[in-house]
Amino acid sequence: MATHDFRPVEETEIASVVALWQACDLTRPWNDPDKDIAFARSGPASDLLVMVEDETVIASVMVGHDGHRGIVYYVATHPDHQRKGLGAAAMRAAEGWLRQRGVWKINLLVRAENEAVRSFYEKLGYEVEPRLCMARKLLPATSE
Image 1 (cartoon, helix red, strand yellow):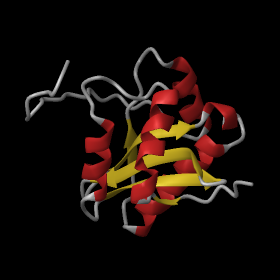
Image 2 (image 1 turned 90 degrees about the horizontal axis):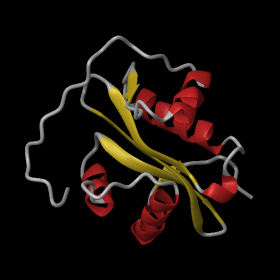
Image 3 (image 1 turned 180 degrees about the vertical axis):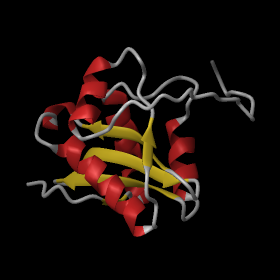
C-alpha cells in the first residue's frame, strides 16, 4: 500500500520511470527522458522523486531550482493509480524538497490546451501569472 512517500529515484528504477512517463503521455520525441533524468540527478539543484508500491514506480515528479525559483516537470501518476491524491502528493513532495533548500517560489509550465492539468494545479493553489515564457535552444535537437 502506498503511503504517499516520495524519495529520490534509484538507478534500477529509471526504466520504470520512463515507462510511467510514456503511459501518461508526457514524453515528446525531442526530449530524451533518459537524458533528462541523468541531467536532473547530476547535481544538487535538482532531483527526480518517485513513489513506489510493490517495487513498481507509480508516481514521479522532477524538481529543481535555479537559485531563485523552483520548477517541476514530469508530474506523473500511473493511470491505474490516478484520482487517489498521488498527483497532489507529488506536488507536496516537490514543494517540500524546494523549501528544504530555501526556495520560496515555484513555477510550472502547462501546455495551454491541457485544461484538465491546469484545473488540477489551480485546485492546489497555483495561479496563472501574466508572464510571457520565452525560450531558445542552446544545443541542437536530437530529433524533431
